[in-house]
Image 1 (tube, rainbow, N blue to C red):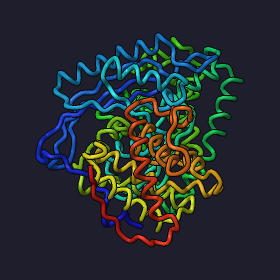
Image 2 (tube, rainbow, N blue to C red):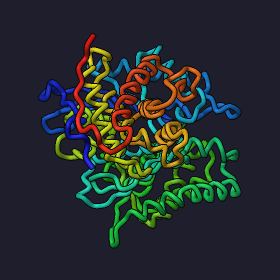
Image 3 (cartoon, rainbow, N blue to C red):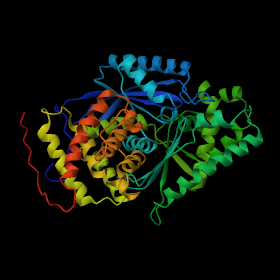
Image 4 (spheres, one colour):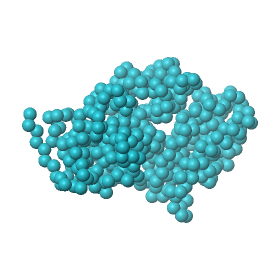
Length: 497
């Protein structure tokens, strides 16, 4: 399957092809905010890290009753982001790209806080799904390690979730995100210090139960006789690596990327941690005060993951989500043409994968997509002023607009909204998925109305305007292939004011 040849979707290369770029990427995690500022050389293409910044704000420390982000946590976050912006500006960063993950996804007031960040700081933060987070972690690791086309399992332990990824340097074979993280487990399951035997046993069993399914699914993607290597990322794993290295060799590895430790070393360290109080954990060389609070459940997640995977060693990689955000930016700006080239089409391939899953009539869908992109192009600057990104969202909506028939023909436009919204489209932010789902929702029946819950989910007036205007084009394109027999082969369009 390919995109419509008459009106293909393409990535527009950066207009200043040979120019070096300075870019900042911020990862708003459940435990900490991280920023990396890099200098991108598009002639290689590669990037050099200029500086890293970190602030532990604990977005995952939410109100126990309501699940809302706490006012003091939001205040700390705004302060940290403001400092990050100033640092990026001092290094002449031309753009700051920011993403938010599980803590912001799950908090009832998370989206409101993202709007507040944009109002207060002028910083747009993209909310990404667990699967998209895993994909960008994969990109980040690939930017720092050579896989030699051999299978690697990546484990990333965050504050709110743990990502398991399988890839060999090409398209990822498996991406998963599980709701177990060091901050989440500490707040939900640990009340004793040192941890009691009963709490430790329950925590271990809970982690194992949560990891069993994703581990089984990952292992099913391995080919016979493959011996994958395990790569670990994130602050938890880096802290464990430093502690184990100091204990074993008496010094901290430099660089940390490439350092390996054994499952037995990790198991011994976990058994030691479970007997220590907070103050005793804090006395471990390299252990920060915030990390000492959450290190045990983080270490236990890694121990159970490696045990279930039957892997006896792990290699550390210091690159992860924020570096993956940089690589994704390079891909979308046409700065990577060979290595990772396949990733530049992730949106299209992900859309087509969802279409296959729900048995969409692709012949008709691609005709309609061709029609709607022709309408988009011919009316651009006349009836609307949307650009390349909005054009791509419209294409995806056109391909998937009828997927709801998989559930029922009756009200299938509403079913399409649900399937797209929950279909784990990769390459898109949460807001972009919401826009695609709304565009598909309004390909028939009622026009967008403020009383519709799905339309109200678009909190930006600009996004609601986009859906109102572009869904009208999709309606017309759908009407041109109503019988789905290709009666109209090609579309011409002229505008008469």
